[in-house]
Length: 336
Image 1 (cartoon, rainbow, N blue to C red):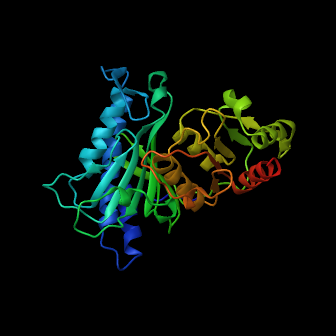
Image 2 (image 1 turned 180 degrees about the vertical axis):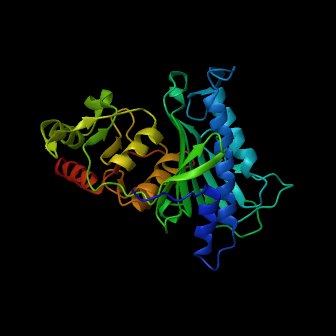
């Protein structure tokens, strides 16, 4: 068995920076800051059952969903950890109705941060894996000025980096800058550092797991219904297909990334654009999946090519192993 390298997240980021002679170190510094924020959120998530942090705040977010105390904590941690480093000109969160301006007393930088502070938070009380998703862009407005909505409304293919953190039986951070693959780091609670545990992740070309909320089956497009029936009637590697759905996008896609298969959250008759947010969830996860060799589409178009028009825009999404997405695409096209 090959001996694994002892590699911290900070060191890995710095080594990646050295491969680009013209790098300023800014992207490395902000990724390191995100790692620190993830540690703080992980600590709070892990003790959530022991302190008075569970339950609803009594308010609702911009999507009309009840906001939990841990959502607010994670949102505040990310804002406070990232707004003073001089790297960002503007931020946006799934929990905030408007863009988040950098306080006037702090320097503004050339990057933009979009994030979902706590994906799958409805699962908190049941101790099911939840996560944080983040996405980084370069600004499109002039340097040295406050960031604007235009800086946030960029298509996903322009991402400079993206990542997610899974808070489960262990805390795992996965990130990519697009150039040097997708890498995963597991938090060692005794050492207090993220250590490289999944180097250069490649999604299998095909898998036998499909992930979707089949409770919405009757409202799905006919092509998707046909695809699901096909999977249920066939085998892959002489084994039947398996349905696995956690209800936390981070958890479902982390499994898909490692084991292969397909994750789906389609539009339906009630929600033609589905429920997942393009900018905070779908774009960063699509960037990671594609960098690992997979595919991500909205049913017709590549997710990363979609031009967002609103801060909290939603989109149907199908992503995972390339052969699985290809087959689904075929069923959707034939049913038109």
